[in-house]
Image (cartoon, rainbow, N blue to C red; front, side, top):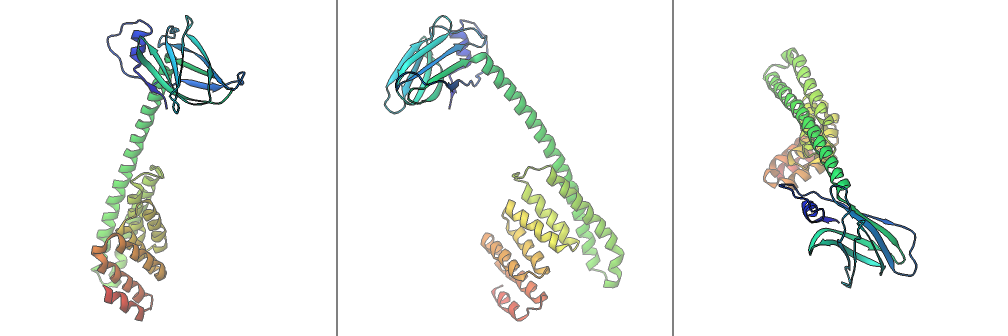
Length: 306
């Protein structure tokens, strides 16, 4: 890797300019392989320019072998150029020094007979860094905007899901014959929640840490509306993004309701591993799944464990 030793030091020392203030700017050298040099040793040539683009003369360039610690020196001429031959193949640290102060460091790997070029142009590299900083700032602003959109959609989904849960609770208190009067309200609420959560997911990167939470809530919305297959596939994505005992429990519930009781057991077992304090609840849920699937005798063992 390359390490700058204060670009403004280069300005003050190499260019003999006087600056009142400044900031450290990372700079990068260029090393390019050319046609092989004569013999088995390598040769390195290049030039050094300051932040104004002017040549930097009388700068000592030192190549030190990282293994043998043998060093090879040269000095930039009046045109800022240098050439150093007779360098054995190997890994080298390269330092540029002016008035006994190191102004720039980099590393270089040389092969036998290689003719390499190493240019250091602070003006070009400072401009590149400024462009990179501008691009990074632009990307950060875009990410903030996406997060704001995601959060707004997620919050809207939560509002709709909470309302749907309240409707479901109200329906459960009514006689079965009267529950149909609220079915439209429940369907509308869960539909809005599903739409908002899916929109929130579109604003998230695949590796975003919030993805597991959004998927878990989306699974709840599917489960509340009775779409258990969709809920199970969504919970699978949720636990893949973020292993969570609650999501594994809900995954087990949804799988059991679709008749995949054995797969549900694997989900409940994982929930127990992550959350042993609630082991009884997970075994009880598995027993209920077995019972509802007609496997009544098999439900006795997990009930005993619960």
